[in-house]
Length: 333
Image (cartoon, rainbow, N blue to C red; front, side):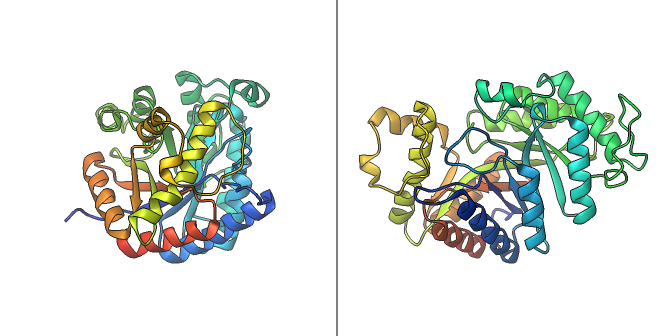
């Protein structure tokens, strides 16, 4: 039997048609309390901008609120898109979070802007190239160290000093995998929306891993892999609920700005070509009854060789998402 490795949750705080942003955030915090009680290991909030159907823009604020209403679960970023932020401010924000919630904060870092090019221009603080990314991480290591000083400039983060906040590199490409390995940090692979060659990317990360890198925080490679998950009592119900996610992806492809849409008949969703595109982009998924999902998760665990999984679940009705989490916990823990 395949070992049931730790499960985590990635939340983008979906906003459904007819729902206010305030209600969406409130539902996300209620879900945080639920998954904490259910035994999930981590809850990460993504950073995404200029999207009508998502409310996960101010990641560190969401982390603070979720950590405040939970007890044991680790809460972090999946991730902070480093080019959008001054690295010292990231150190100060996450140092403060680590002071408030000791041993419960994770800092996942990405190089992408998490938005379109026009919006990125309004956010950019630093370069997204590999060298700038590595330099920023090296400074963050220093600001979180016992000395509390950045490596490029001897400036202190003060609140970050001595917190040693665990850092992860987020990636979706071969280049991202290589960077994570060379930095000697854990790698969180975005296989849930870039499934192509995910095993090769993980293998590259492992083969390029350098525990002696000045940025290294771990001794051996460590991988968290993303997968789309939706559990319902039957395969048929799960597939119908899944059409909300499929509609969201089609909207992204066409540039249409809509809130999360109600489920629909799967056969009525787009053209045959559009359905094929959705299937190819979100092929790493476990959607169905508990037995179907369990088998899919075990298969993905074995194929990926991941040390942990992080699941992404979108639903129109927040109660369907909560039910999915409850059923997922029952079948896995």
